Length: 226
Image (tube, rainbow, N blue to C red; front, side):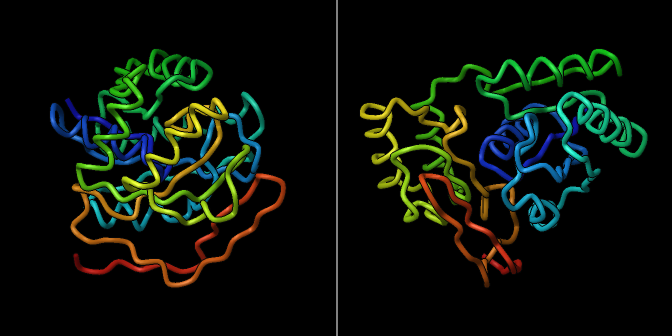
């Protein structure tokens, strides 16, 4: 089955892509760039780097833009998926949804309307197992947004490695965050993975942070050989 992967640039969509590739053919990536920083549906930090990721993975990319108006943005998502059907003959859509019924149900509805299969390989997966596999299987994900206590500015741009995972596990116990960030506590950017033939190297970036809310903004990045 030919699939299109909804790709935000973060760890969940890329790990879902990794799992999908083990069973089916991934024909393309699908990305929606929202102008609304408070979008209900779509990942915002560094979404402009998805084309670089697509190049690193050797996958074609379908991109549309949206104003990010609640519910209306679903029409733009439907348009993006429809374009993927027309251009790459996809028969299903892959998401990186973990727990969000809001997001998963809306993608499922769009897929149903377009007569497509909706595949959520991470749905209700065990957080500890998933994050352990993410760290050990060659994924390099940087934290590019934080939105809750106790995340400090030091987390911005930090790689989720073994040490960071231990700190996140501690926060789960002390501050009741979700380990995966599915509660909106943090966002990520994948700069390398087993799917990439090249890695993303960040050449220029800046941090914006105040009151446990901040962004790691990548201004310039390039692909380099591993």
